[in-house]
Length: 475
Image 1 (cartoon, rainbow, N blue to C red):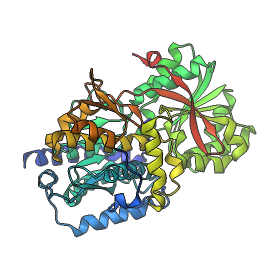
Image 2: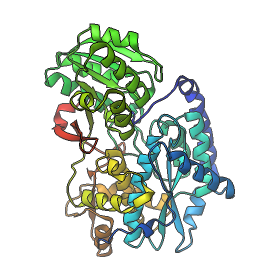
Image 3: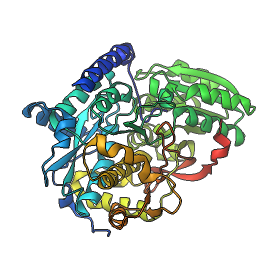
C-alpha cells in the first residue's frame, strides 16, 4: 500500500506530465536532559485536525506563501539568523479524499517540534511546521512543492506519500533532506542522497499480506483492491506470495474508486465463497462496498486490509456504514509495527497529548506508525544538525544516517534531549526513538517489521497482536 494513497482517474492521466514538470524544475533548481511538554514550544506551528478541518491548515499555508517573496530555499536556510525560526515543510494532501494524510503528517511534525523546542531548539533556533497541500494529485503537488520552497525556505521536508514521485525531485534538488512515508516499490533501490524513506516498501507489505493469510489457513481468499496506484503497488507481491504458500484466489477484483455502488462486484465476491477478503480501498469506496456486502450477504467475512484500514478516517467511515457490532469482528490489518512502549514512544505520547487544540482528537495518533515516523524524522534531523553544527541541508545531510546507525560503542539515546547531552560530551550516538530502530540501508530506507492488527473497540483503533518475523518476508 502506498501510505494512505488514493488516486482518481484524472490523477492517473496527469501523473506522467507532473513527473516531467518536477524533473524539469529540479534540474533548474540544481543549477542555480528531557524537558516537560509545553504548548508554547510550538509557537509558529499551524493547528491541524482530521480531514474535516484540514483545509484550514492548507489555506493558512497558501496565504503565507502568497504574502512572502520567493527565495532560494537552500540559500535562505544557510543564512538563517541566530535565533530565527526554522521551518519544516509538511507536504501532503490536506484536502480531497486523502486529506487525512495531512493531519497525520502535521501530528507527527508538531509533536516532534514540541519536543525539540522544549529542549532549547536547534543551534539557537526554534522549529515550526508549515503545511502545503498536494490535494493528492501530482499535477497539484508540483506547484505546491515549488510554493513551499519559495515561501517557507524549509530546512527539512516531511512528505509526500504517493505524490513523492512528483515532489521529491524538486525538494532534493534544493539539497533539502526529504523524509517520506511512501511504499511505492519504485523507491526500493533509489540512490538520491537527500531522500529518506521511513516506511517499508509496498512490495514487502504485499508479501506480508500473502504470508499472513496463507499461514493462518485462509486458503481460499478473495482480493478486492481499488485501481489507484497506492492500492495497486501491494497487489502483485501479494498474489505471488499467497499462491506460493498454497493459497487460491477465488475472486480477484479491481474496483474504480469512488463509485456510488459496487453491488455487482459484491455479488461476485459473495458467490465465490471466500474464507477471507484481502483488500485496500479508500474510506468512501470501502464504506460503499462493505455496506452493500452486508446488505446482500447479511454478514461480513474476515477482512485483512493494509495499513490504510488502520487509519482513523477509514475506521470512522466504514464503522458508520456497517455498525460497531459488525465492524469489530470483521476488520483486521497488516501494517508497519511499532512497539507501543519504551522511553521514545512514551515521550512521543506525552508531547502528543500536551498540544491541546493544535491537534484535534490527538488520541487517534497515539499508535499511528506514520505520525510516529514523522515525529522521529524531526528528532533525527535536529540531532544531525547539532552534529554538523549547521542547519544547512548540504552540511548536515551526511550525518542523518549516522544518527540512527548501529555503531559499535555508540550511546543509545531515545530522545532529543538525551542526544544533545551525549553529543555535547563527544559521544557517538544511536537514536532509537518512538518507532524503535530506524537504520537506513544503502537505499536510505528504514528497516521496519510488520504486524497483524486487530480492532480495539474502546479506542476505535487497530492495535498490533502478532509480529510477522522479518525472516518470513525476506526475498
